[in-house]
Amino acid sequence: PLAQLKDPSLLKTDALINGEWVGGAARFDVDDPATGELLTHVANLGASEADAAVTAAEAAWPAWRAKTAKERAAILMRWYHLLIQHADDLSRILTAEQGKPLAEARGEIVYGASFLEWFAEEAKRVYGETIPATEGSKRYLVLRQPVGVCAAITPWNFPLAMITRKVAPALAAGCPVVIKPAEQTPLTALAAAELAQRAGMPAGVLNVVTGDGEHSVAIGKVLCERDAVRHLSFTGSTEVGRILMAQCAPTIKKLSLELGGNAPFLVFDDADLDSAVDGAIASKYRNAGQTCVCANRLYVQDSIYDEFVAKLSAKVEALKVGNGFEAGVALGPLIDDAAMAKVERHVADATSKGARIVTGGSRTGDRFFQPTVLADVTADMLCAREETFGPVAPIFRFQTEAEAIQMANATEFGLASYFYSRDIGRIFRVGEALESGMVGVNTGLISTAEVPFGGVKQSGLGREGGHQGIDEYLETKYLCLGGI
Ligand code: ADP
Image 1 (cartoon, rainbow, N blue to C red):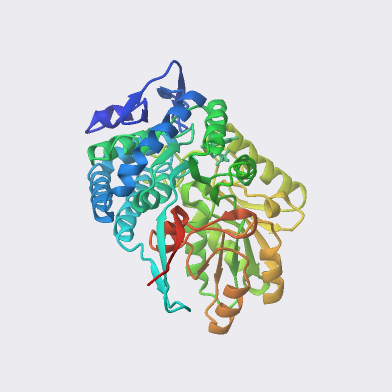
Image 2: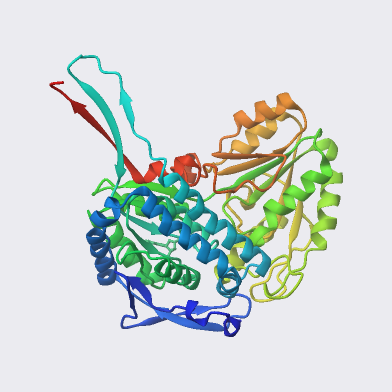
């Protein structure tokens, strides 16, 4: 799939440190999850290169922060335009290493690039404050300044967007960055870094350190331990988030964590049922169910339960599974064998405890799983507690609004939730009661650069995107002027 790039120089396999492409002594394999075929080998770097990247970023900081916001914004905007201009090649690289259908990959390139546009604009709006003084001889000012070197550790499910969502606000604020992309999907990150170079990013301001799973742990340790790194942003599992948080404790780093979800999707009896079915499909089966905001548990009110299950299943049966490069494919492969094992475990557990497979239910290849609908699902099943991260929609039954809210909130996670209702009172009550950072009301798609994305409870800390997104990368400084 990578032989057909219009600009083959976007296919980078070395890491980027201090403006130089670094190959290192060893390489690791990157494969195509749809076919299992080897795509290429990428630089397998470790602690010493991570250290060098942090040092380069530290050295680049004074000049980067000294630029005007408008100058930094101009570089981000050029990078944005280059990503859009090369969207075809970037989508191919993304589909090849990650598996999502080509049209979805293109959607991610546009979405990922939009964070650069948004934060290029926000860079110019990092306003301070003046506070009325309580002594005549004093004046109180508040400045907002870049926090310093930032590290970003990102997952494989959105190989571009999870990077730009962190890096764009950091750069806009005046912070240099060191990125550790997921070992499954380093190629999109490196292609984006190549375009950042072309956009005029100064050496050391944007560094990408690649490594396999084992090396990622070593790289992560350095990023957490170095005092020069003042902020760590991580998107990934809650389990790894906990490790990184502990590793950052000795140096008291600022942290942004976007961790696991277990999104409930509630359908009340006053909902527009067809619209709820479409929303469920968009939320559940996007990226083959591999997003942290995918509906993980569907709760449907008793009186419309059977009708909803029938309508959803009919539409799910029509979804085509296959290689993301094939026309008409709606669901690509799962990322790896561990992902497949988890999906199969959840389905087997649910059926062993009385759930009914309405459609799908099994794999059709090493990495392909049929889009599945399970009915009569109950709270004692694994899929009620854990994120399945695959194309399985478990449907639970509820009687009352209070019961639905209680079931939806019965989780330690709190990233996204969704509900369908046309009752304005209910929309406020349920919207306020759901314990999550984001709530989709009568929609299954909520992500966009202009809004604050993030979770509560064990789904994480901080917000990405929106005007809030840049706050994570700024310190507040109070200046007290006396003797006036
Ligand atoms: P997922 O379950 O989505 O693969 P992970 O949390 O395992 O999520 O991985 C997300 C990112 O965190 C990847 O870039 C991975 O390499 C990195 N990672 C995993 N474990 C560690 C660790 N102990 N230290 C630093 N980075 C890690």
